[in-house]
Amino acid sequence: MWKSPLRADALGPVSAALENLAAQGCDLVRFAVPDGESAELLGRIAAASPVALAADIHFDYRLALRCIELKVAKVRINPGTIGEEWKVREIVKAARDAGACLRVGINAGSLPAALRENPDVASAMVTAAENEAEILERFDFRDAVFSLKSSDVSETVSATRSFASRTLFPLHLGVTEAGPLIPGIVKSTLAIADLLREGIGDTLRVSLSDSAEAEVQAGLAILRCLDLRGEGVNLVSCPRCGRTSFDVQGFLEEVSDFIHTLRRPLTLAVMGCVVNGPGEAKKADIGITGAGKMAILFKGGEILRSVPFEQAAAAFREEVEKLP
Ligand code: SF4
Image (cartoon, rainbow, N blue to C red; front, side, top):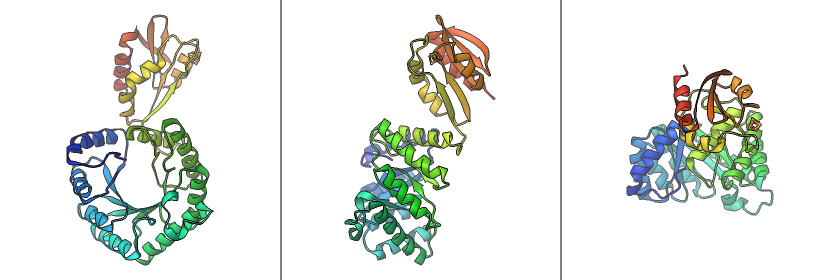
């Protein structure tokens, strides 16, 4: 999600960021649309975007109508903030006419007023989702995905699981306001993996107080670990270790941008020493490890060549690019 307000002077950086996110495997980027100026700018961005865009709308249904008119692919509405049913009806009608889709995003922190006092927050979230699903069904509108998010893992899983058992609408998964990089990824993974293993979920977002790139990388890693999306790199690498003769962490930082734009399903190994280096590299399409003053490159367990450390990153990139 683009986290700064959309303003005209941000169009250049936004376009570059979208290109980068698309290259990393992101399928959809959501923008907050708090006012008319943001809606107009989002329309301009959507017209040239390499990735589908979603508009996040609260309070003013006319912003949703304008974004749909401007051909933004998806509009997210929150039943706790969008207001009366007739406003939802107007949005649904516009979305149907334009072929746009909706996300109905239930958030524990902004439930509809009638449900806010319910001490069972997961149950209140399910009721909010059911009420909105009933409205969409009454209008015979099916191009919608629902999400039920809390910053609490158990609440998110419980609410999503319960709603999944009562609806045919697809579900978007995620823990909202999950926190900074490490706790955010841990919370998100626990919730998302639980649900995906049960066959629940159609789209996901790892929501982090960090970069959009980190969110995409974390989401793809979850899908890769669960064998749900094969593309991209499975990275095998050593922790800090007294035996290491190769700066694993420094090397990974150096090749990080390169690795994250590889879309082919590859296993790459970056090992600290020869104890497990060649063994792990056997399973890797390309592996690298240190021995003495040299870095050794492997392919399928066979040594390809050794190079001085300062040439290691370039040699690694070269060997990966040579792969069929
Ligand atoms: Fe440590 Fe070497 Fe094992 Fe890596 S392969 S964890 S550096 S002993």
